Image (cartoon, rainbow, N blue to C red; front, side, top):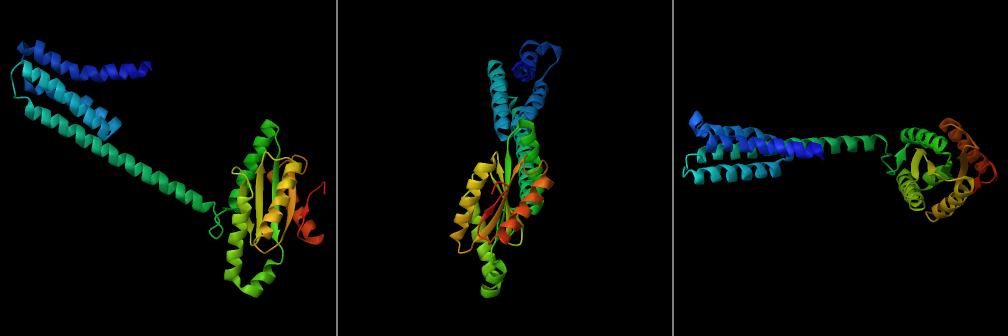
Length: 270
């Protein structure tokens, strides 16, 4: 707050100095050109606040110079006033243009970053993002002593589905499955297309019991799309203490669910 008052005081002083020179020190040879000193605070305020700052700077300049001109019955300051107002507005427009360009660039960068970590077919995250995010979640779990669970999901009989209905129909099925998975989860959970017809889910803060409940809900939800799936569930730290260990164990449990007859959830306690 002190810095804000100091900046305001300095800015006001810049406008008051030429006024004081004009009113009280006219005998020192100061003439109309003294108002050009207003260019500095007007330009600074405009560059900091954009068009809004330019209008404020212009208003203060007009009021200040007009008050002095009226008190001295002199209209010769109008050209200088116009110059200062014009510089303030021009500077403000430059700032607005610069800020808009920066915002557009930032938005473009964000869109590109999102494309890099998103699966183009299903719209969920891709495998590249999975490992980075799981590493971060495991580190957070270790720091705060909280659980993190991973569910690996694979559609049953997807190859036969593709052979029967075609790859375009298979793509539509994958899209519907991804939507069903996303709908059955919390906002903070992470859905990833691991590859082909295999998905992975990071359940943040979920222990083994709640992860099993969520996995069963996912299995039943996906059935509404017309296909069953097998699931493997692991939880940090009992199933692994690193992202690599958790993913490897989840994939192993998924294969165990397939071998046990498919359309089921498999975990260490199961």
